[in-house]
Image 1 (cartoon, rainbow, N blue to C red):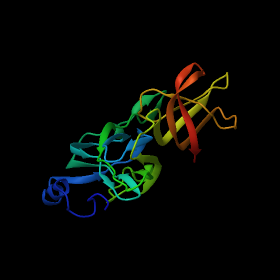
Image 2 (cartoon, rainbow, N blue to C red; image 1 turned 60 degrees about the vertical axis):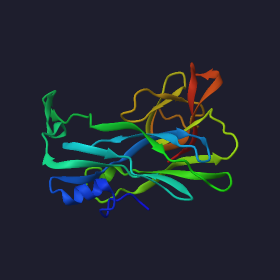
Image 3 (cartoon, rainbow, N blue to C red; image 1 turned 120 degrees about the vertical axis):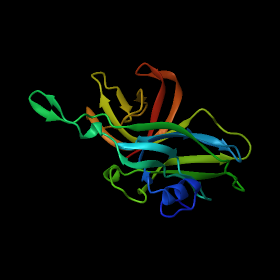
Length: 231
């Protein structure tokens, strides 16, 4: 079952439906990190990063977690006041004789705990998240859901050396050929262990992969990102 963005079925949404002063605002996920493997029935934590509520007073944030026998899905949303606040994104500031909007948007960077998954045998679950930048400012009941990666659930032991991750990134190649990626609003960057064969200096894409430590540093870094797919 998807989060109650269509009907008043949770306490938060019931409050929004009954309170004329508040409403639900879907939130877009731009980046996620989570353990590559977890033990059956063991709760695990997922890092969620995305864009915040624009020009609205936030009353509550909910990660919107649901799970079934094939996937764990995040459809986060804000409970916001219907009152419109002064909006920095609407302001224009002089720059070299022209009017230019600021580029910093409100965002969230939080951890959400997923209840233990209990498959009968070891298996893989998809990790999905609501992600569609084109609808970020639209009052829609829900955003389209996208596959960010997978998590393996085992019953005996797990390999905790990898952290799976996925989302929208910007990448750049320096003069030595090293490629680094960074996700919008996420502090820091990762060196790509296996950069694409193309030689583009800058590119942007939705990627999936994992973060891990390597024995021999790559471009001077021991904690790197291994690219699995790029779209």
